[in-house]
Image (cartoon, rainbow, N blue to C red; front, top):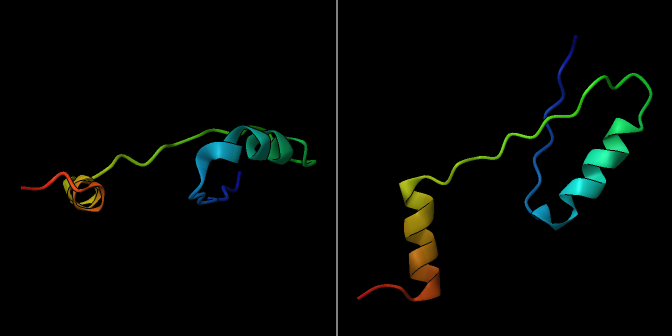
Length: 53
């Protein structure tokens, strides 16, 4: 079996993309792995949201 990794930034269409991929002939399963936010990702979000003092 061969795996294909697709990275998606905007998760709002995730269900539709998952459904479209499953319709492709030869696709046996579609699984989701969500990337966990690192402490650096959370810190950058805090800065962008103004949650600093």
